[in-house]
Image 1 (cartoon, rainbow, N blue to C red):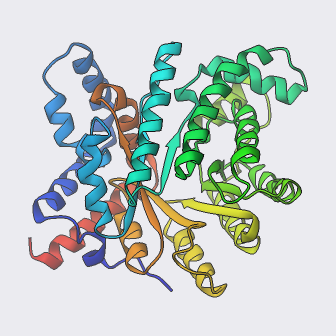
Image 2: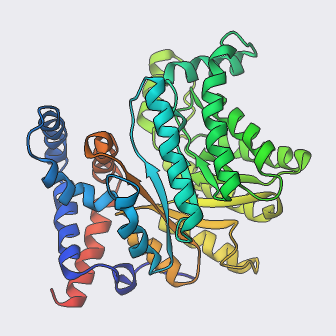
Length: 388
């Protein structure tokens, strides 16, 4: 069984200086009050164009992002690649509302696909549909699906055309692409588009991947239905499996609008469904391709053990693990060292544009039970081992 406590492997790519820098960053993030105060201060300073970009870029941006452009990410891609870890370039801009911005984002995502064709260290591309469309339109289209109507169908064409453009580029260059999951109230139309793209591009292997958030109590049933569809249409159903990212927002909206919460009753139920989904996919791997996006040690070890138990090739390109850049290096590097296929999500974009992403990372490390303390503990162990 694989273990994740070997810090000499986890941090072998870090110099003493970068290790200490990570220590102080996680130390600061570990103070919720400081994060709460720092968020509006940084946003305010950027809005006024005060000279703090250098400070941000040298600290939180450097920890969690690859650069401001695709080319700036090259060093990170090469750095990870030396240890057998792939890069998933994630253009992390949000909040756009104009068609010209959506079209520019499509072209940027296609750039990451083209870079993936040239660089063996880039196994996947990724995009969020909310980065290339208006959220209110996705809501209306999802409500049409739920209600069995076509009242807003005219809204779909330009969005679907952008998705098709990205997926066609992914197919042409043979670089698989993840379509990220979003909030439950806009997910129905995303699921429909994902499947439509799979019908066109996943006949031979998984090029298009849908993302399942297992903190939703209906996703295990959705996965089982996906197998039925895969068999019926003779496609490979690509799945990126995650726990999820919108839990508090989901529960608040369910209470406010008086409908049953789509979220699991507790973390244990989420963990059970995540591992059950791993079991199901491994049992039916002929019809699936999997990327397990998780920072959970137990699930990572569970999947690694399943791969061994079933006698599967650790280098099978249908089986990937993924974590975010700057987090859970003890999982990523130990898995890669043991021969498994691993990739890091590497967000990039102009600092002002990726601030929402960076602030979420700060929030996540503050709020997720044990996340910051785990990162700090492992760094401290490695510092002690090195005598620094």
